Image (cartoon, rainbow, N blue to C red):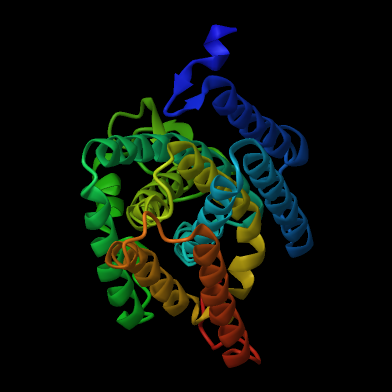
Length: 328
């Protein structure tokens, strides 16, 4: 019994184990039951799955509210909303990666599934390191805040140029240092094929493995913005990690619907930029006003207002057919 009550990063072990149990059950349900057969995930199925993930995330938030109080509940909901929105901005990058390897939609789910496994581990490492820094050096929060303001301003004025995945230095390095097949081999990451020089059967990576590595690297880059953003909301590692993982879990399902209509969110990036400036700025505002913390209810309300304005403006400005040559 003492094991379950032991302190793990400020919370009893049983709370962490309960969260891990929910995540494990969702992963088993996703790959082992819902997608044990290889099929293309349509928009309707994608939206239904995404709705299920959001509902479970909100129920978990309700449990956090009940177990830890309204402050923690509001911080979880704010963190979830921010992480979900920032993650949506990552969808276009994922779509470009799948376009580069010419992956059919029916083969994409397995890559995204194993991608989320990597995300769970990588986020744990990054958030653990961030929590240790913040607990030891309180001034690190001000560095996070300044970084978010700088990133938000840079993002707001950045163009919408499309990068060529094939010119990515990592892709070039992997193609130079690994045997990579030219063709897809279903959902396989590795296959055995003859070596062109020796004729021996050797292990080759497939383009799907390249896609998996690129998606993992893209998430690390994305986390450089998202992890400081959630630490600016709360420094509680439990709230930071659970809101992060629940936001990312559902995004994989939502991807299949969003990838087809990503052009409709043309101004979401600007809304996210404003949101990053707000999240960073509120750290300094709270200090200037002598507050211990920026009110959690205000953070949630302002976050919702900024994101709603960005989505509504995008939908209004992009009425009609998508522009020619847009990538989905």
